Image 1 (cartoon, rainbow, N blue to C red):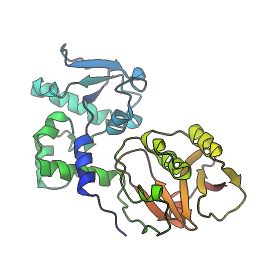
Image 2 (cartoon, rainbow, N blue to C red):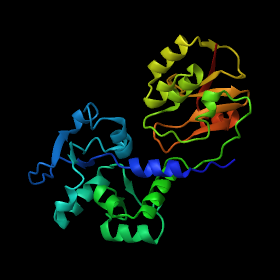
Image 3 (cartoon, one colour):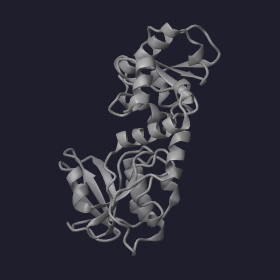
Amino acid sequence: MHLSPSQEDIDYWVSTLLPPKDVYYLDGHYRPAPDPRYEIIPVTELRDHPQYGAIEYLNAYEYWAMDNDKTREVLVSEPDYFASLPMPERARLFGLQVALKRGMVFDNDVLRGKAFQKMIQHAGVEGRLVLNHLIWERMNLNIRQQTAQRVARSWEDDWEVEDLPASLAPHIQQIANTWLHTEGANCFGVALYAAANAGEWLHTWVDQATFLSGIEASGYLLSADTQEQAGDLLLFYDAKDHLRHAAFAVEQGLVLNKNGQVKFQPVKLLRTQKLRDEWPDHRMAIWRR
């Protein structure tokens, strides 16, 4: 079965594609004129910032992908700040975003079509469009919807899923083969939600230690079995025995799975073998209660 986003999904993506403020990466050499509409934060303080270190900013601007060797600061501005800059300064700031690998920078592989080509030609840098509030507000609703859907595809382009079994538990029916309207939910949170039937796990990013504590508290133990059954958790470990992924078995041969922590990555029902094929160099262990 092919999964397609609903209008509600698309509306959610459009309304949340950009966080409330623009974030620009700086290399320590560029220094804009003073303006009360922005603040500059050392990059070492970004992840722990109470507002700009939040998951909605981290996911949108992909902090994990920034060039850590060259990025020294981040400029966080009100949406109307960029429009006040002269064109040469806009170009310099956009160029830094491409060079320092900021998120929300797209090329023709993501934004295809004549309308996007014109935007990239007019406001792009090195064939890429650096998306901010000024450009976003200049797009009409149709272009915004197209942008949101293409960005979603760029995160995960395999939207093939299995049909929901009639016996599926109600709390799993609610999220299976859907996009969650929340930021940060990852494989560990979704698996823990399915196992414990506790909705709070869908609204937070869950690390490995929290996940293991949670499943142990729910009565799960490592099993010596090599064939999963309904209710099991499938854990994937790398060559160094680090836990990298988890999924929930809804029945033998069928799992509930989510890749990553971004809202554009759906919660899918997959065949167990397909999941194992996606983690070929990892050891799978079964946990059961």
